[in-house]
Image 1 (tube, helix red, strand yellow):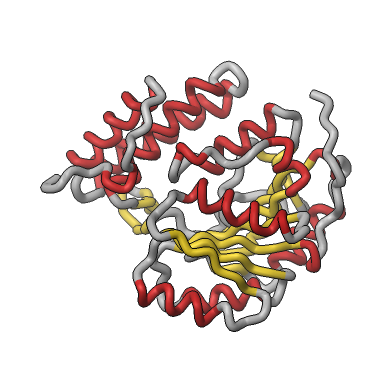
Image 2 (cartoon, one colour):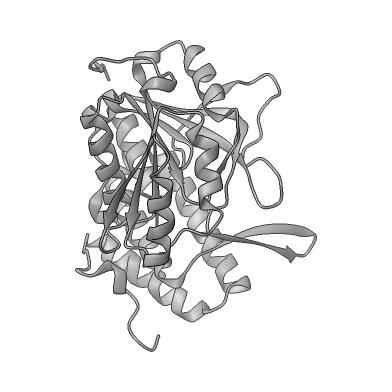
Length: 308
């Protein structure tokens, strides 16, 4: 598919703004922010309804010259918060945004590596995202590549550590607000690729990141790293996955089939190792049913009924 990227300007420190969405951030959050503040021109933090103690900590961070804060009175979801932050930085002329989760630890050479990847790309005008490889709980890189590989083309990358082209974003469109949380990044990547853009990932791990509350478990001779989440996340994971299956099965069948396999494996591991198994299975089934009919609940924050 032929595409044209409007005003595609290469990334460099002065035109990159970092975007971090917070929700009750921990007390080590300011130190992680300072690690990326030295590498980019500006940081915009979008807080999704945290308590007063968390907001005081965030306000103290804004004393640093290149940090601004957007405060939402309630949890608007990751997709809406990302769109808010991108709208803010677009209005101020930034050409690239680095999206980070609040618990991600960026390494000192993160931006340097992402810029090196960009400078070595052959089709720079087609790049939508340059994602980041990362170390997990077990101190292993999430993806393994050859020692001479600088980057690789991927079908999708996670939100955290993604250097996103604003010019491409203007064509691809915003993140899906109705998704609220989970698969927001995957859907955006699939949509970008459907429009002819490329998703790139730096092979070298350049951050430390955990998806969910990662824990180690033994299964026979294997040591497994399990990604545990609060029970309500199982609803959003399954509902949004069902919607993606509906919309992209014929556009990207290989990715969809792999995602179905991953979902089945995740359900199996939930039954083996997690607490509140029945509730999580119930919410998973409910999510897939709602996703099959593209039904969106009116109050996503309270998907779990009192007493469950």
